[in-house]
Image 1 (tube, one colour):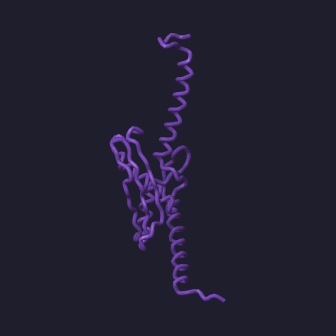
Image 2 (cartoon, rainbow, N blue to C red):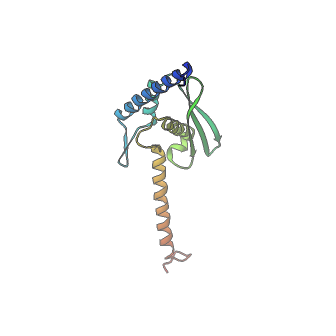
Image 3 (cartoon, rainbow, N blue to C red):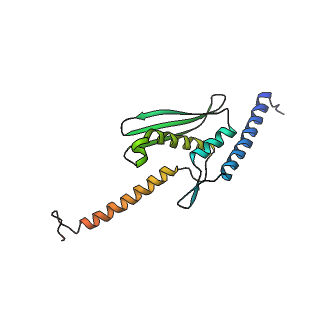
Length: 165
């Protein structure tokens, strides 16, 4: 029979404790009011950060700017354990021309999205992995593509001078 070392026993205890704390944190997120977007309850990054700070006060949430230019940025967020182990990461990319928020706050929006993804990958998500902004952008892109297809169909009925064929 193999004996369990003190280190193995300590690791098992830490794992069980972490899992218990995570379940409590997840339950807290469920209890907090979210935002209804397209019929689904979305828990904002702000709510999830508050829960993260409450239940994991010795963990860190860090950000690294991977790409930054006048019109675009990419950020990597990481959740670091007290033992300096990377527990989860999240990446986000924003384009200044995508929406009104990004015209003035592209970098901040990108960082918030990266934090949201890191928190979700860590286990602190609401019902959805995609951020509210990502879902709004996807819907806007879908609507724009539908409008473009409609415009193309109408355009086929007119010549280059704008006269109906």
